[in-house]
View (cartoon, rainbow, N blue to C red):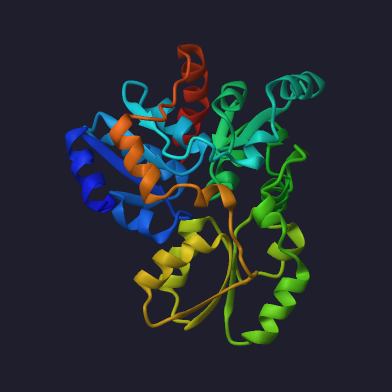
Length: 300
């Protein structure tokens, strides 16, 4: 079967839009209407007149799309594509932590479930986390679920007191100083660009720290020719397309998020054919979670 042809046919038939995260496989990125960071994709979907959103990513991303487009049908082709970091935060323990620190503002990374977003004061992405933290009047900040991103932001905003959740991204957290040392020795002329989900000791050694899109923009705009990339290897697809004359090396061998690789052309086709797997959220969760997202969008 020609999956690409059938996907494109069904997309028109269903009045659907396909979006893909930058960590998805290249063939999924190539068939998508838009490729980008997770929240950027959700915002884009909300601006379109399409009835169906097919989100090639992981579960919390599809939930964010549903929060911003509650009247649309949101499909996740790989229903088992979860996020271990998002799953490290639970509502019961968060409520206990909020009760322990009643003066704190609760800031959640976008890499959280809709239920967690509904419990938080404001959401953030890795690219604007510092601005979000500075925007809240509270001195104390409960930051979840990524302790690594939280520690990176804490260094930028030393006047705030942070209470960190003990979560992390297993893929990024596997990076070490040894990986940096080996990469620097192998590629002495290369610039090291790292995602802030990496451990603090690795982030401290980077030449550039930023979100997935920020890393792409940095490498594209820089006049350097060689780069060591400290984030999931799906990013290489767009980096090479935008910069065919530059060299890119991964900081770690097989730097892969298994969940991001669960979407393929077959289950993308099946999602459109059978209108599965639909992401549903109750009205109360959508209402509360949308508040934390709206507050983030209002940060200047």
